Image (cartoon, rainbow, N blue to C red; front, side, top):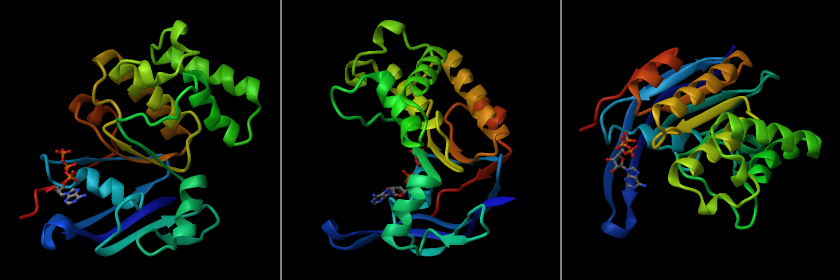
Length: 229
Ligand SMILES: Nc1ncnc2c1ncn2[C@@H]1O[C@H](COP(=O)(O)OP(=O)(O)OP(=O)(O)O)[C@@H](O)[C@H]1O
C-alpha cells in the first residue's frame, strides 16, 4: 500500500531579509513510497535533499505540487495544504523526523529521553525503560552513561541517542536526514540493521545517507537529484 506520493514538488525560497531575492531549492520531484519501503534521496551538495525532507515534514512550506499522505483508514491528506492543526496531529501520530542533531531538555537522562517515546505511545514505564536500555546498549552507548543527560555526550554518542529516540517507537512514515553522519562503520551498519527491522514492520522511510554502502544496503528506491540551475 502506498504511504506517500509526491507530485511535481517544487520549492523556491524567498529571502525577505536579502531584498526578496528568490533561490531555487528543488523542482519536478515525483516519487511514491509504499509501506515497508525505503527511498533514498541522492545527489550533489545543494541539490535539495534536506529541503525535500523538511518540506515533507512541513518545516518548509511548498511552493508548488502535492505531498499526499495515505492513512490506513484510506483518508488522504495533502501535507502541502493541510492546516496547522492537521500537521501537528500527523506529526504526533504518523510522521517522524530524525535529524543528525539531538535536541533534548536539560537534566533528562539518556534512558528517559528514549523511553519517553514509548511512554507517549501508552507503553508501561518499566517496560519502556528496559527497551530503551536495550536499544542504547545495541547502539554501543556505555551503561555508565545511561542515567546522565546526553547533553554532555560526544557528538557520535548524541547522534546514537538521537537515533534510538527516533526509531524506538516508529510511526508509519519516518524521515531521516543523515542520521549516521558522524558514526563509525560498525555503528552505521547497526543502524542499517535496525532500519531493516522497521521495514519488516511496514514503516515507510525517506532518507539521506552520506555513506553510500549503507544507502545501497537499505534502499529499495534511489531517487537521483540534479542541482537545479
Ligand atoms: N532556509 C533556506 N533559505 C534559503 N535557501 C535555502 C534554505 N534551505 C536551503 N536553501 C537552498 O536550497 C538549496 C538546496 O539546499 P539543501 O540543504 O536542501 O541541499 P542538500 O542536497 O541537502 O545539500 P547537502 O548535501 O550539502 O546537505 C541550496 O542552494 C540552499 O542554498
